[in-house]
Structure formats: structure tokens, C-alpha cells
Length: 479
Image 1 (cartoon, rainbow, N blue to C red):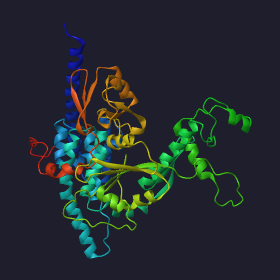
Image 2 (cartoon, one colour):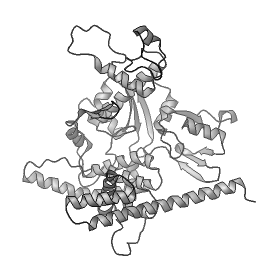
Image 3 (cartoon, rainbow, N blue to C red):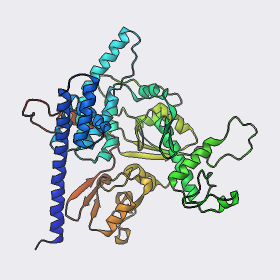
Image 4 (cartoon, helix red, strand yellow):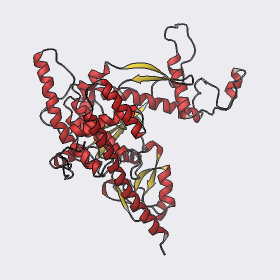
């Protein structure tokens, strides 16, 4: 008689096989879409006609077909090995989209073509980018074979930065002049206020609003103005009634109302005497990861761009990274360190990526600071819940003698913390914070702390193709 465990094991084995088959079918869909695209006559109307018919055949929108055609074109022209792995079912479309999207920074050339010599230099950069893109592809596929798409995204962004023809300082300086605020009309009397701005400012502002919202929920600061009555409650008859009404707003709602309060003060009204809104002084907290060399440059009194060899990537070229976003320029981070904002600075070894030390504007417990720096997110395989939404868990339960030491502690989100303690999942912690999880069906899953310097695998990985593949039967590339 087949046991429950055997049935579950067979089900998991079957799911893994189905996943491979689905990836291969998805690759075939891109193959067919690209083949049809190459066969259409030139002209805008021919493209529109093909796009509309393909959308009907696939049961998706024409906008989605546009996205798929863009990915298929990049796989066909620039990312052959990624296409091969997709056809083999070893990665899925989400991996391919992340790899190609992150790789766009490699060819993002800041045009300087004011004269013939400058235009020739720009053309040389485009040629150089094509060679660098192949090296980036080989490096990132090593991780794509091991990581989920969500975890691959920051790795791909950092690796792509190693091969970018233009430095992040040059690209950000060129893009900052395009910062803007815009309004997008929505339905049901709503609209989106969109701000295109440097990432450090955006993350700091969002964290600031989140801190206000949480403080309002704890009732430790005055609540921002109610832009709308609480859900399920009629408009109050008087201000006193409004103050007494139960505040049922969620964090997102409070963030919006707090933003309105922060911006609503009229700078042109010199007679305004009302107190400034809650949280008017920015207190957003961000986390920066820097190499030892980057720390010296970050704390320098006088900044300056670092010369880069345009023929090959420089080890440790990404010196500063905004946790949860990706590489940022030293020039953008330096004012933050000098400001009154809250920040955590994680310094890593330029050769191994291991955490050397953590510094903060406000001191926190050394163990917690180290674990936040090491883990970056929930340590259940594939989960990217941030550490601030996770709990520090004893790998070996304290009740069973497990020590409260960094080599026996790791962050788990509430969902996976409960799963660990109330199911047949088992976990062991090895050297360097590596967690080896064993599922109820006996399959093992290794979860490593985020690789702070994935570029150090790059040289060895770029010298070999991750897989060997045979050309298509008709002699054409699969995409």
C-alpha cells in the first residue's frame, strides 16, 4: 500500500517534471512568435496586423505581445545561451526577462556626439558593449540556474553594472536632469501622482512615510488629516466627532494622507501659523552596502569620479549598493551620510563579500545588525520578505540547547517561521550562514546568504558556456 509520504514524493517529482515541460513549451511559444515576426513584410501596418493576430492566438493583450516580441528579439540577437537554457527547461521566462532587462545598462551609452570624433567614440562604445554583454550573460546564468527570479534580480543588476560601458555616476548624472512629477488619470475619481527621482531619495521618502504610518497605528504621533472618512463610517458631524472616530486606515492609506499633510503647507502664505505636519523632518532609513574601497571614497570630504578601464571590468567596480534596489553612485550616497537621515552602512570585504562591520546613525544591538546585514531577507529558499518583516529564529531551538549566536540565528518571515516550527521541514546551519533545508519528502534545498559581490564568480564563469546545446534542426537559432 502506498504511504502518504510516497504519494507526496511522487507528486513533487511530477511537479518538477511539469515545470521543465512548461518552460520548454514557453520557449517554443517565443520561438514561433519570433519566426512569424521575421516573416512579416516591412511596414507599420504589417507589424500591427501581426501583433493583433498573435494576441488573439495567444489570448493576451497586444501590449503583452509587444513585450514578448522585445524579449524574443533580444534572445535572438544578444542572449543565445539564455535562449538555449530556456528551451532546455532549465530556466523560465521570468529569468530571461530579468537577465535581458538588467543587461540594458551595458548598452546605455551617454551620447556625447557633438562632433565627428565624439560620435566615433560613441560608436566604439556600442561595439564594446556587445562584447561585454556576452561576458555578463555567462556570469549571470550561473546564478539563474540556482536562484528564483526574485532573488536573481539584484544579482543580475549588480553583475550588469560590472560590464556597463558608462559608469553609474555618468548615467545617473545624465538621467537626474529628467526628474519630474506627473499626474496619471485613473478611474473612479482617482489619480496617481508619480515622481521620477533618484532611488536614494525615493527609498528614503517611502521609509519616512512608513515610519509615520506605523507610529500613527501605535498612537505615538498625531494622525495625519483624514482625507476621507474611515471605511464604513459616515462623515463626522463635527471635528470632535472626527477625532473620536476609530481610525481604521491601513498603512498604505496613512502613507498617502501623511504625504498630503507634508506637502500641503503653503510656502507662499507667510501668515500661516499652524504647526507643521507630523514628521515634517525627513527621517527615512535606508541601508547601504559598500566595499572597503567604497567606504573610503564615500567618507571622503571631496568626491570625484574614479577612472575605469574601458577594455575590461574592474574587480569591485560596484562600490555602493542600495539594499533592495541595486547599485547607486558614491556621489549620490555621500550627502545621505552627511545628513540627519537614519542609515545603516554595511561594509563588505572587496574579495570575499563577507560582512566586515556595520555602522548606523543610531546604534542597534551588534548581533541584530550583523544578521540584518548578512541575511538581507527571509532565509527560507526563494523567499525575499525583507528582514524588517521577519523574525530572528534559532536554527537549533533554544529550548533544545541551541545557542543565541550568529551561527545559530537567521531571519525567517512569520509564515516560514511557523512552517519551520510546526511541520516536517528541517533546517541545519553551516559555515557562513548557509542553511540546508530538508523538505518532508526528503529533498534538500540550500539557501545561501545574499552574495554581496557576485562579480567575483564572473571571470571563471565567463570563460565557459553554462551548457552545451545543439543548433536547431533547420540550422537557425531557436529564436
